[in-house]
Length: 149
Image 1 (spheres, rainbow, N blue to C red):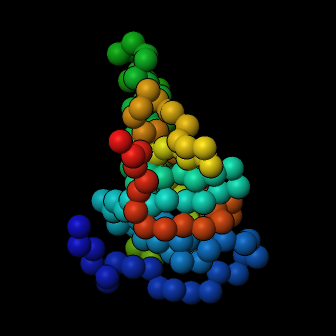
Image 2 (image 1 turned 45 degrees about the vertical axis):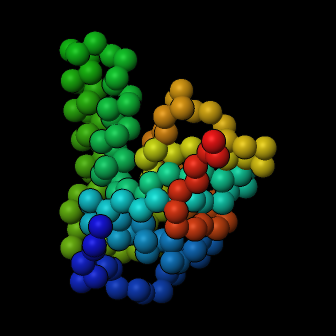
């Protein structure tokens, strides 16, 4: 999918003294701004790796909400869905010039955990929605891991 480079946030120094990869932080800021951005990505963390598709915070909250209410009755689901969407929209409203230093979390869909011994099964084989702190990521690569057949 082709992205317009004019929508990228300017690369400005991050000065909040939190140790995180500035390149990954700007990629996540761009994902939050672009809204329809999807990038397969693998993250190295202290306990192993997590691999999935990087999405905007808004798309994450939509996926999280639907996963959360999937076991509710239709009546209960609707009220909870509205509450969770309201919470998510407070943080991921349209912003013409996002400040990358305010980007603290990374959001993945179709995420799977991987340890040195292999992947940890999750959601009966389907990927999960996942949110993590950028300051806890020790490395990343573009592309998503898949189980070997």
